[in-house]
Image 1 (tube, helix red, strand yellow):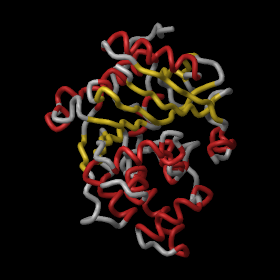
Image 2 (cartoon, helix red, strand yellow):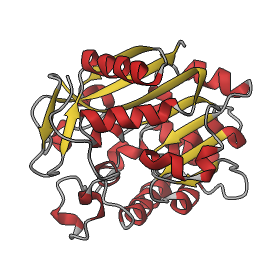
Image 3 (cartoon, rainbow, N blue to C red):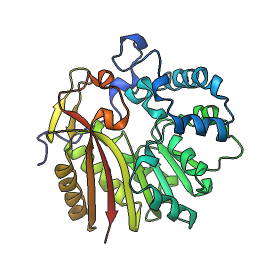
Image 4 (tube, one colour):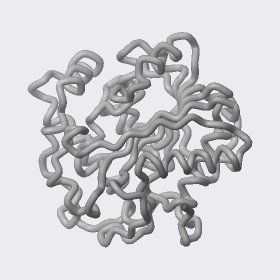
Length: 291
């Protein structure tokens, strides 16, 4: 099942750092209002004190601040407005564990939207850790207007080089719930295995790893003509096989649940994803450590 490609030398792809005009990208939408879902509107109104009639202007200003840092597809399309963590079938368990003192790590945390959702639903922010290779943290404070009352910890670090970062080293073997969304699909098979092995180093004996990434109806490596980097697209079966390999190579055991979703299932417009390869889907997952 492994890819003939070598493990990627990059921790984030070149296209995310491009300085092309934003209108040249197939994943930059002028309006992202359609992703202002009722849950997001409620969060902004109640938690962030942004009135409904000001929310569209607010999120577009924030989106362009984030876009100036990195030109990620999720940024340009506005899908970061969707509260992904609360869509997870493990969400009630995650909340219960966090309220009981568990620790949470969001790898690729971006603006920290999922962590704000957790806090809004009753999780203590001091138990949350956001990890990202580049900081959008101040933009997150601007988005959610919670500087001084949001006590989550941010660590700017490359997860593939986690052993070199002292702040990350302190979290080894100490995390109960790891969330990683819209990150691992940037790599080929070997790259995803290496990233997952890095996650295992943080996971306690009963940890959960949850999230989502782009998959496909057929498990295979693709080189998208727009992105120009080799990426492995999982289906639920190949994703489970990958975690079996990760477990074997780290001396751990994992129970993997994964689901394939259409764009409509996610509340996304299929037309916005037309630049992706045929058969592309969203793969969500809950991986539970059992040893």
